[in-house]
Amino acid sequence: YGALFVGAEDGKVRAFDLASGCLRWAYEGVGEVRTGIVLTGGERPLAVFGDILGRLTAVEAFTGQVVWSQRIADHPNATLT
Image 1 (cartoon, helix red, strand yellow):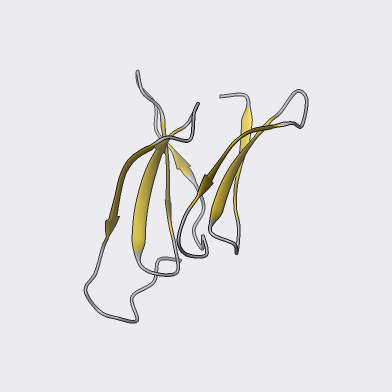
Image 2: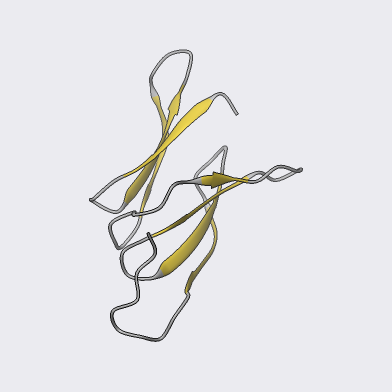
């Protein structure tokens, strides 16, 4: 993918270009990103990550556009780490 994907306490996931170090895109989430970012293969690669509010989100790896986002558990203290 030629990028480094980073989640942050501010709820953002950023993709930085490996060659230049420049920001490619930033996704602004609602909760602190607490998981590693998993990349899928295929025709439409996704970056998938979880947050402190128990939400699992998938964005397009090349653009940062949201594909889906879903709270995984109903418990008020659920979190993904």
